[in-house]
Image 1 (cartoon, rainbow, N blue to C red):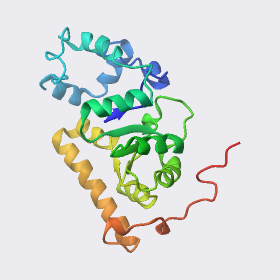
Image 2: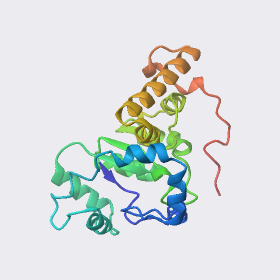
Image 3: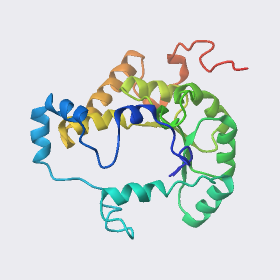
Length: 234
């Protein structure tokens, strides 16, 4: 999977406001926040430290999270273009997914390169403040690709009903991030399982109430879509 919408790091306003850093810094604000979650904090103190085991100790010069941050910052390719993507595809030789497509013309170009799938995504809304949502752009991109590759969608999937809406608008499937991360943060592995079970039940129930038993039979006729949903832009 090649991420296309992260060739440079965006100005992530919430990260700046919250003072996000790797490793985290203990400030008066974060200490006050932790003090309201003492039970969780005690559990975390007894938890084995986690790290990027596939990078730290395997990449030359990366020995801890501090050096990992510096190394990660150097991995962004500000000159990424379609020719480089094509070179990467040839070197890899396996299946290729391009993540971060928001424009129908880019979707056509990706399909022309022969990728196996694209992921309609705005990087969680963090990269370009004001970018259109993935679900809004999904129908136009599905139409542009015209079946030449799979079209997945990422961003804003918080329930099983969200999955069904994306599927009804033509997505092959959806990806989830925040929904299972919440479960992971709250209950560990059991929390991830619970989050997936909740979404599965919501999806199953919504399908039943829409008169469907097979998700592959779902089409956009189950949705009422505003006439200007996809936007009419000058």
